Length: 314
Length: 213
Image 1 (spheres, chains in turn orange, brown):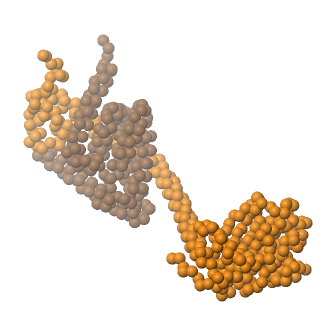
Image 2 (image 1 turned 180 degrees about the vertical axis):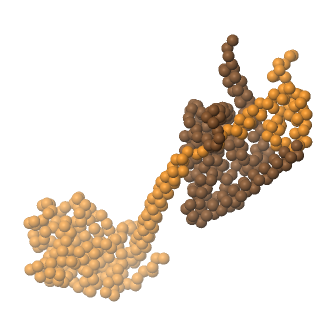
């Protein structure tokens, strides 16, 4: 079988020379090996041609001009760098805010759980010596409204001038006040001697959302539910009141005339123990809103409890 | 030729010293940058931008892409510099980023076809060079780039490091993360393929320019 010139296998020495030719051309061989290659090249035309090809190719590669980076490379780099730093700063700020929000959320949830655990413990061991009182409020917007007078002798003290000619603003029964108030929260108190039984009848496992913020909702006379509770703590006798109040409407009221019982959705409940005037009160309450989302019901019940405090939850 | 050999050795030693001194300055600038000196990285940029650009250009073969990739390389280096291993050489670390980015670019853009020498390139000015010489040099460069672009990308990167940045085999091994023997083998294969392509294209050119009888 005849081989063409290119198909013939290289002699062993030519193959070895071919392997080291680039290094030979680049002057990277040891002197002894370079001498052997040189001797071989003198007697081998094919390897000399190969060496010539390497010399031309590598010389062209070596002499290829070095380029200068364009002038705008540096300016573009700095612009990109500024943009990236600004982006990372914005992301870090967002992460900080998210972290702070997460911390607040965790603290709030943990606090709510602690308070609700404390109130659960109080519910499971109702004190035999409980004086129960209930404060309830029904409202239509706007929320501020002077306390109205009530025929019952027990009142909750004088308002700070907001009741005008009515003088001190007592708690009011619904039938006597709806015509004289303009659609605002009205806080009344109801003595409920059997409140401990009602509390015990509440289904176990219910964990009310605890919030004390609406204890501080004030009516137009500046009186809050918390202050009424302080009166409860001082053993003042409070008038009876119904659970639901007709929505007060009056001349000039922004609220449209509504049926006696506007749909009320209980939006928030609470159950906690508070110390007022040297006594412990177990305070439960509900806050409801009407269909428009405005405050429509505020009911607070306080049980003055002389039993020892339950052990604190760690 | 003992005189020639000693001259080569002297040049090699000087080159090694220059490289070591440059490397020392690089590491000092890295330290200053990490200590908060805002001008240190800019000095590193100025020192290496042409080298990085040439290496990237040798691999991708297109000036616009080389410019964008050079910016990306320095951005990536700026971001990763706090994790730069102390004791390593900044130069080889930076060139490794450059080679990787350039190779990634070539592989991601392998479906695109383009001519590598259809744009105006600006080479280092050579004082005393006439217009004819400059044109000849540009033509040689275009030929070299054409041959390079016909090689596989793994050959381009090692040739760009060796001939566009004048790195030693040891430095190439450091940049490419391989042993010295592996670097030598890669360089040998790349040279051989380059020579084959170069000679073939030269013959084509000579055949095309020969007068038809």
